[in-house]
Image (cartoon, rainbow, N blue to C red; front, top):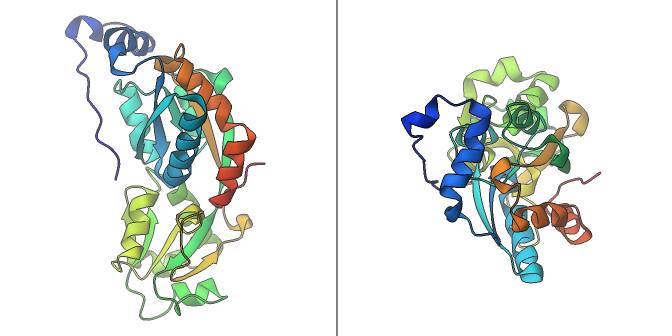
Length: 266
């Protein structure tokens, strides 16, 4: 579940200004919301656990504060367009940061790939998934299969691509239920609302996670790479904590943490 954010109304006299100027004006008007030593970071839901671990390490090392808001990449993008005063976006794709830069909402020069995502078929039933994902997906007693909404979440796009590559999409499409983000999709499976789900591998792998249920890690050649990129948004252009956090995200400590959550970093 994403953290609620403050929605800022744009005064009528600002509505007539060119859109690319609004982030600058919003930051100048509401800059007091974030102190110079605090970064407001919008994080794709799949990366929430890793982002929190990195933020904790970063804060302990630098003294800067990091506040995280999580949600689907699509919804976070919509909030940024509406004027949410985020300093950084950690997206679940590369297309959204490129779009943000093209629309004048962030710096293209600041964008980089911070993680490569993995996709796993998961069930809380320890005996349900073996070595044949097709057999698990097409079993007669499977009523619901959860994926993230492809219109909102890059992991949903990857899930649909994987099911199509496995040749089962047409057969199981009536059983598909969708979460608004990959975190909600995991909850659908973990609570038993769906017997199976295609979720981020990071939801099942981390330094404090105990093995649970059954899983099958899908080969990367079944879907287009889930290349996750970061971008510095214009409200964070002069925020020392935001700039330092992006630098820290590329360092050895952060990349080590990212690896423990099941992501690639190359």
